[in-house]
Amino acid sequence: DTAVSQTPKYLVTQMGNDKSIKCEQNLGHDTMYWYKQDSKKFLKIMFSYNNKELIINETVPNRFSPKSPDKAHLNLHINSLELGDSAVYFCASSHNGRGYEGETQYFGPGTRLLVL
Amino acid sequence: AQSVTQPDIHITVSEGASLELRCNYSYGATPYLFWYVQSPGQGLQLLLKYFSGDTLVQGIKGFEAEFKRSQSSFNLRKPSVHWSDAAEYFCAVGVYNQGGKLIFGQGTELSVKP
Image 1: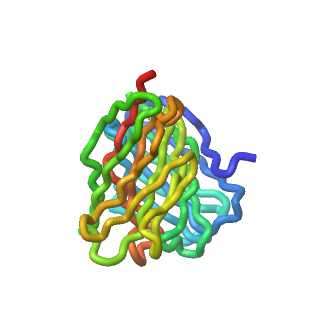
Image 2 (image 1 turned 90 degrees about the vertical axis):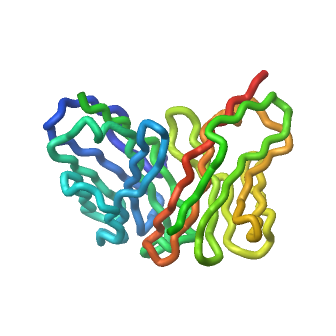
């Protein structure tokens, strides 16, 4: 009965590879997000989707492509992985349409990506 | 530009002692403010949030925070810390009309001494 789940939990890969991270929420929320947490634990939003529509795209390299097949899923595909992509990636969701600024966001457990 | 600053990167307190974690924000309007906690290897969990009204906000696990507009602060407090409170704490501000975007502070790591 996990609210926001991510797979895989750990991902170790070589530079230049392409990888995907999956996120699912069973809370019935309309908005989903991807955050990146770097090695200094700094958290920064990457994308948000509302009901499959892209709302936020925070100057992320176009090697990163989010895909939302339905409002319960938001996947993150990363092409041509670089060393600097090593980080923890968190998925989150919130209830309201278009994710207004007062909404509580519910976070998944994170995916720890290591690029060698 | 909006920003959140947590001046203390790491704090150590003794179990049973009181705790205050500092958070300062820069925002052009009345902010929506949040405190999240991240336990080791886990995702973030909301402790409490402030929208408007009473400036003293109660949260889960015995935490509270006080919004002080004059000081642009939203400090988190707990009267008696438990060993299980050891974690990373993040203050965040919700940005108006930007699709739920949260701007986080750098985080404060809390260690608890027995």
